[in-house]
Length: 89
Image (cartoon, rainbow, N blue to C red; front, side):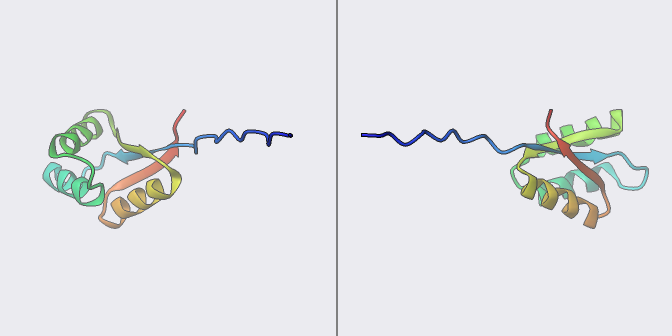
């Protein structure tokens, strides 16, 4: 009896959603918006992302598949925040 070759599922590539610092939005607005757009973020996580972005110029919001990454990034942009995505390395 011939056995079918086993298929190994490759995990889908993951993407980083990045938030970029801007001189326009308040820290409170950024935290509130992060929590609205990415519901899985706790208040502490959103504050940490905001502070990382404020202090270094860019903050890591979340790492996920391409579709949610694009959705989160576009949603942040629609609310006036600067965001990009890039492949996780």
